[in-house]
Amino acid sequence: MGDAAPHGSGIAEVRRIIERLARGEPPASPALDRLGAALRRLSCWMLAERDEARIERAARSLETLAEEIGVAADGPASRFSGPLFEGGEFLANARGTHPLLGSANPVAPPIRLRVEGDRVVGDVRFDVRFEGNTGWVHGGFVAAGFDIVVAQGAKLSGRAGPTGTLSVRFLAPTPIGVDLRYEARFDRAEGRKLFAAGTLRRLDHGTATAEAQAVVIAPGG
Image (cartoon, rainbow, N blue to C red; front, side, top):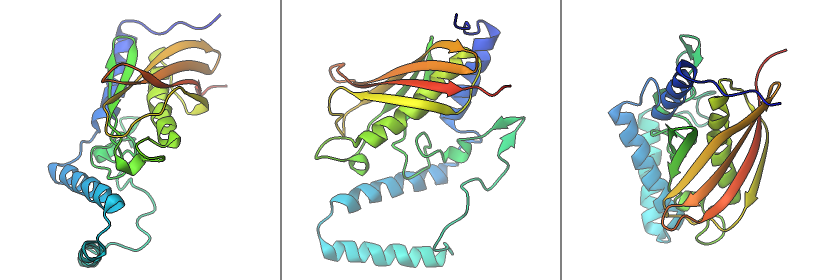
């Protein structure tokens, strides 16, 4: 028989942890958020631009900027420039740099994560950076979104851990440029295995484009 999810103060603490991850803590500075937003705009532009003269001008400008601010060719070894832990908690979205949730990360969609009742919700609009076939989100990015949202859903058990398995079923093409919503819920626990499930829906007419089942492995003997 599966273990029950926590209640009362236990759920409140789980929500606090998830919401802390969602907003980024410590938060991104206004300047870092602006820089991330500008780089996202530039990335979208460069993927669709066909004017070689404009591309050349942009490349020269960015090369000059990189030299001026001393950016190394191979970049830092890790995005964490400060402590990984604060008060015993891992700060996965420190300064808004998480690759899926981070407001300051130029490669993030980003997914806007929150807790609603007994579910974890993630709103997102994938843009041209995530396009596979014309007009559709590449399935790998759909799955990456499930990996973070469904893993957070497993936390509603009161425990957490890395994803052990993730199975995604694609029901319909997921469009770029359309508001979407991930929803995830904790299903049951069997020992260290936390079972969670989720769906991805279009918000314009509610059609589900994908669903997922995941097993998260909680630490323990």
